[in-house]
Length: 74
Image 1 (cartoon, rainbow, N blue to C red):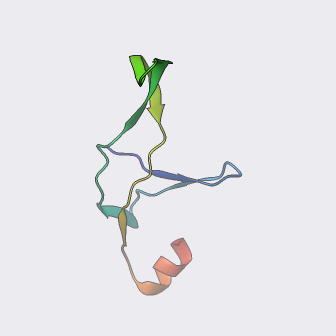
Image 2: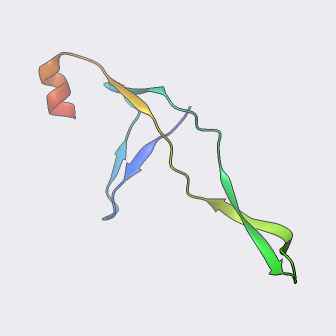
């Protein structure tokens, strides 16, 4: 099961997967690692990776149900 949340700067979270809303497109298999490096005379020496960095994804959400119900839930 996939969990997709929208988190506001104030910490409030919205779950984007539920009975009335579903993700219909989106590629969630991309990620970015922060490299650990040492500067060299020319370029850098990568000796490891620290952690995954936050990633932004493009998604399409489909809302289900009658229009009035979608307005209430959205």
